Image (spheres, rainbow, N blue to C red):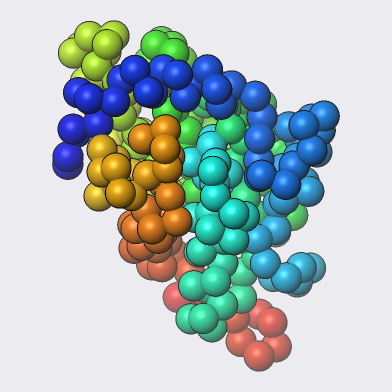
Length: 243
């Protein structure tokens, strides 16, 4: 894993953390909307299909698609790939810029409304940027995972890195939480959400940490590799044949 961004992008990370502190699900969301209203307005990434099972992406600005057109976000790209591959799922983008793991947990029940089959968790970047206690990160992610699994929802957990300005011990402990949770709860695991994108200027927008359209395509491929084994094709009658 290339951790160049941990050494050279800390100033821009901290600036961005402050800049992205307010909920902003998509560029088209009105400033006065609440976080939940904004998510509702931009939730479905494809044509509405009341009968389709859902894949929910619960995350922060990296999920919301900060700095991108709505159809360039990772959830939107996953929706297109699903359609192209003949899978019948509705992808829901439940990303809110500036959200911490606690914020994601606070809106979990709303995010899991409907026939949700898979939950992709992309949270923790803002916890790390703010130096929040790792034990709180683990507790919040544990609650999200266990509550989703109690509903029979398959979970994909994506890892994140913390900047080094809080010390090597914090950075290491932060990183290890994700692997520990994946093992403890037997969930699909992506070790680093921004693998192959972080620290590469040509793959990020001007702030240096949010993927641009090209970088988003790379992240989408990373997520797809973990998601595809969990998918189930539906028969012509609309029922899942199982695996």
